[in-house]
Image (cartoon, rainbow, N blue to C red; front, side, top):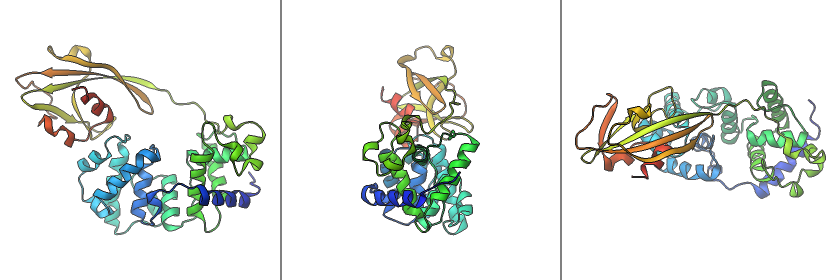
Amino acid sequence: MEIRGNFSFALTLLRWFRENGRDLPWRQTRDPYAIWLSEIILQQTQVKQGWDYWERFMHHWPTVEALAAATEDEVLREWQGLGYYSRARNLYFAAKQIVALGHFPNTLEEIKQLKGVGDYTAAAIGSIAFGLPAAVVDGNVYRVLARHFGIDTPINTTEGKKVFMAMAQELLPDGEASAYNQAVMDFGAIQCTPQSPHCSECPLMESCVALREDRVGELPVKLKTLKIRERHLIYIYIRCNGETAIHRRGPGDIWQGLWEPWFVDSPAAVPYGAVLQRQNVKHVLTHRILLADFYLLEIGEKPALPSDYIWIPEADIDNYAKPRLIENLLLTL
């Protein structure tokens, strides 16, 4: 697909970015560690929420060496509330990879070897920290390019990914990879938004195909392939002489490595004396909807539990990283 006027498109975005770009703390540095940390945090997370977590991580672990020297529990605890906890585990693993390498990787090939880093994240880190000529393609970029150039190839198909990646790379201006990538992402986040984009104030309105053809609401095209499933969870918080029982979730399931109260797999397994505190508490994930029941069991003698449960003072429960759902349930107590 031939792209006409790409210089004008890029120049317009760069001019818009200089006047309207977001003032974010990780943009005030070329430290690849700080930039990498921001990109991992902002995967599946809005900037407003991720900002506080980035500052918290930079305060606790100002260098990659400091992060690598932490424990996984400490990292998960600081990540608590952000969700998608595999990102935190990957972040911790990658920190150890970087320390073992002896320097932060500075080529796309090396950056992609880091755990949890795909094409988009590698391009973002590479272009912003090292000036590498690599175009980023995320949801904002898909939307801006699809609307401006009138592309209706579905973005979640193999063909669509190839088309948009090639287009993004062709549009990348020489020597301006860092500014341009940040410009197109900010433009999608601020100007060309998913709902109610500011078309009447858009500096690209005269050349926007979607606006001219009244297809702004139709682009980009995404095939509906995701099937949402429901899952029912039953938790029992045991209160026994100032202690409670928790266990860490194992691999291969949601919330791997996080802690939770006693979990049973059916209502019939709820012990006598447990009092229902909350029922069908809804928690929405990307691929499923969780409905949780939460019971309180106050007893004077510890019950027999599976071997992976540990007993801790109730006052210490905040020291253990827990899923957001469990945090919300515990507020009932």
